[in-house]
Image (cartoon, rainbow, N blue to C red):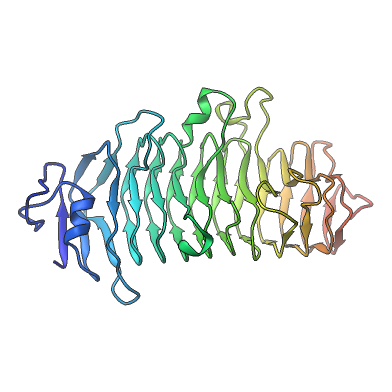
Amino acid sequence: MSAIYIAPDGDDIASGNELHPVFTLDRASELIRPGGEIYYTHGIHQHVTQQTIARNGNEGERITVCPVPGAQVVIDGGGGSGGATPLVMLDGNYVTFKGIEVARSARQGIAIYAAKYVEVLECDVHDCWETGIINEGPTVDSNIGTLIEGNTVHRNTNHNLTGEPGYGQGISLSKGKGAVARRNYIFNNKGEGLGIMKGHAGGSALENVSFDNYKINIYIDSPVDGATIKKNLCYCTGNEKYLTYGEQLRSTGVTFARETGEGCLEGIVCEDNSLLGCHYGISFFEQKRNSGLVNALFHRNLIAHSVEAAWHIEPSGASGNKISDSVFVSTNGAPLFAGDMSGYELSDNFCHPEEGAA
């Protein structure tokens, strides 16, 4: 069928047409065909079990999951903690999931696992026990070309409220290749804001607004084949609910580290970002020895009003990195550069107050 309808009071033995809607995304997935639409009808769709679309579209015939025009749709997992599965699983190729509120999952809100060219667009994902939107396959090649764009992602990773955090992110581009997170609004997550994680190859964070997330607003861990961090706005308001545990510190703007895998992080492009009022604007954390940045480009960034330093680099064997055409401003006496800046060449930057290193 070219159009399948899901209703809060639907029945999975029904035909799935507008007059006889089904109840679950799983049943709609069985009935839909490439190029078709799955429509959620108005209202709160209560589900405590995973809702999955496994049907594949193709390049010219995407499958779209969205509300009936004009409808407001919530998929509500009922809250709870420690669930075994995400609330919504997008496991088919060339699937677009659009315009739906996903809330209160006992694990992740929306997950993309072993699927290619999936889109998650204009959704509101909030109050999930773990990550809001996660893109993670079993291998790098199993998960390719995900687009996560225009979403509002907030108040997730609430498992960190129970003690020393296991982190997680509002949006996580984890194991996979070529995913893009663009123009998302990411805030008040008790884990980090946006992460490119676990060896994700060639991931991009573009034009996002990420603020008041625990510890880090954008975190780049172990990128393979480079990562692009461009035109993002990261800031901290000082909201006490979202300062780091115990120490009550503001989060950093963009942090790099090598937690998984071996060797240095190569080919990073970080440009045209604005990082305001953060603990550090940009930092490198040496999780492993000799894991530093190599041949990274930091260009046209604005870092202002950092609490501790605009830049903070732990010793890490860095080399060939360029910092240029940027503006670094400190108005509270904090240094602009702290830690080990060897391996970083600075040119044509504006620094206030002036520092010899620049």
